Each structure stands twice: as structure tokens, then as C-alpha cells.
Image (cartoon, rainbow, N blue to C red):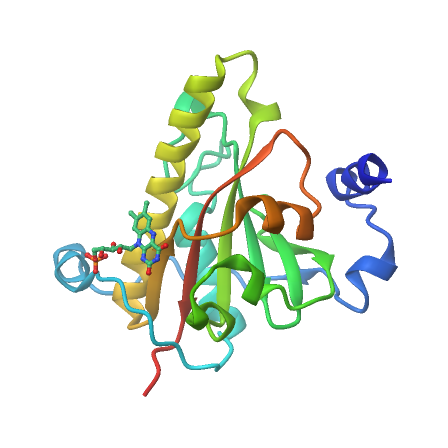
Length: 211
Ligand SMILES: Cc1cc2nc3c(=O)[nH]c(=O)nc-3n(C[C@H](O)[C@H](O)[C@H](O)COP(=O)(O)O)c2cc1C
């Protein structure tokens, strides 16, 4: 059953009963100019942990995901580097309406689960309020025959670059953000129906700041 579900997720043929009414979401094209100057966002980058429950607009979500891990060149390379360009990190988006995975090609969100799993993405209370919790998942199947130690180190480093991109976008937009390791990875992996060779690296809570 678990293997069949994993295959369904991989091939995008997840049964509708799991994704429920959750529809694929084509994001608006990202706004790739504008934003605050780099030195300003470096001055402003910080972690904060008080989130409003307001949802991100589709445009803000689009810009955020592009800044974090979108495609920025015609050959499919991305806004963050990855070891040997394996691009092994998948960004899962836990939103109030359900769980999606970000598809950089096509700049869209593929629905996976029709449940709000935000509370399961961490051990701190604010995670249930944040508009989105981005779950960074390393897909070791994309990392060839590298030794396990290399897979762990490279995927952790690659996640760091993506998370920092998200931090800088949030600093530019005045969004609240914190990257987190405090998560019950085994429980969350089960909830997200991940395969055994997919590893949750970090989670990042993002939303409008609580007034
Ligand atoms: C790998 C890593 C794991 C972290 N885990 C958590 C966490 O579980 N919960 C949390 O509230 N903050 C977490 N943080 C955020 C740090 O506490 C924060 O970056 C640090 O206090 C410095 O604050 P600053 O980001 O505002 O500079 C984590 C940061 C990193 C880099």
C-alpha cells in the first residue's frame, strides 16, 4: 500500500481521495525584478516567530518559491546551487488547504494531500499559524551512488542555500520567517507519505508578521 502510494506521488497520479478537492495550482509568473537592494536585505534578514494567520497572495507565493528554488536559466539551473547540479531538494508546501510539492519546471504546485498538516511540521506552536511551512526534502534517489555521508552533507548544504534565498526574499518583502530543525521527521515523513530514500532536512515557516 505504502509503495503504491509512493509510486502514485512520484508519477503525479495520486488518488483524488488523498488530494481531495485540492487542485494543481499554476502560479502567476514570478516578478523577477524589483525588491530591496541586496545590502539592505542582508541588513534586514532575521528569524521571527510570530505569524499572522493571513494567507500569502498567489503572487507572493510565486515570488517566494522562485526566489528560493526557481529556475533562473534556460538550461533549467536554479536560483540556488546544488552539488553536481543534482537538484535533489524538493520543496513541499504545507498550506491551510493542503500539501503541495513545488514543480520548478512549469512553476506550479502539485497537490498531494487535502489536509492541513502545518501543525505536524514542527514542535513549536507558531507553525500552525504560519501561512506556509516549506518542508525541504532530499530525494536521495537523485544523488546516484554517492556514499551516504556525502548525500547527507550535500543535501544539508543545498537546503541551506535554498532556505537563505527564502530568508532574503522575506527580508525584502517584510515577511516573517524562521528555518527550523525542530520537527519529528519520522512522524512528518509518514504524514507526507515519503519514500524511505526521501529525507526531511529542514522546515521553514513563512507568513505575514503578527501585528
Ligand atoms: C539549522 C538550523 C536549525 C534551526 N532550528 C530552529 C528551530 O527548530 N526552531 C527555531 O525557532 N529556530 C530555529 N533556527 C533559527 C535559529 O534559532 C536562528 O537562526 C538563530 O537564533 C539566529 O537568529 P537569526 O536567524 O535572527 O539571525 C534554526 C536555524 C538553523 C540554521
